Image 1 (tube, rainbow, N blue to C red):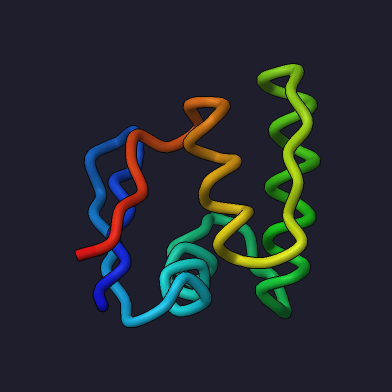
Image 2: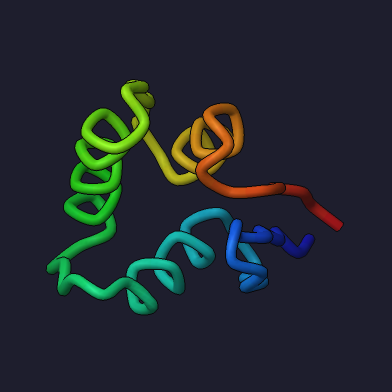
Length: 79
């Protein structure tokens, strides 16, 4: 299984799990986050500020699906 995420700026993230993809996105972030949970929480906060939409983030899979739902990323899929 390979999880893939296409961001709105065209970046493609690929990993063996949803958690691995979120970790890659965290490392690629302009802001330092000490954990994946902190990254997801801060991203959710920014979704409210900049898009006016709340997202759920109980885990990496839900986090990525929610980002796709509000069109903060283009696509999430598994191959």
